[in-house]
Amino acid sequence: MKIAVLALQGAFAEHEQMLHQLGVETFEVRQFSDWQQPKDGLIIPGGESTTQSKILHELGLFEVIRKDIQNGLPVFGTCAGLILLSPMHLGTMDIEVRRNAYGRQLGSFHTVAPVSGIGEDIPMTFIRAPYIEQVLSADCQILAQVDGHIVAAQQGRQLVSAFHPELDNDTRFHQHFLQMIRLQSA
Image (cartoon, rainbow, N blue to C red; front, side, top):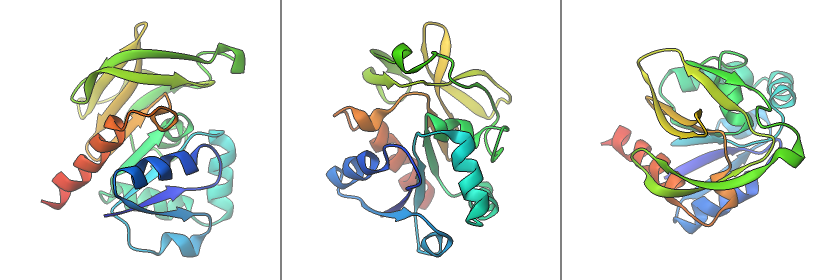
């Protein structure tokens, strides 16, 4: 298995380390030619979603990534990656998002909460995080909520979290993403 990791901003190296720990090969996507490599899935890390969207357009990656996701490429978006998959940008996932919902950097926090289908005590690190205000179709399943706000969801082969599982030692969220890919291949 080989996973593309969008390496424009954010904790992309931490996602790569998590996947390597699970025995999965990765490569970084920094330009259009990188995208041409064979891949089984994509991770879109945190950062600033508007900046990432602008860079994707400048590099000619925006439309090709959207098309590949619409054609079934499994994708996992964390924090800004969640926003990028929403109708605000790529529009591949049926979610309404509130950006910077938890406030400024000082509003960052860590908690533990259950995630449907993944585990009861998943560590969650929120950094200037969004949350999902609502899912916009029955195809989108809510996986986790914190303080009444949706912080993780899945729609088909798309998985999102408002928090950063790559910043904790728990591999279960990444394992769930890999399992989504394996089920697709079966």
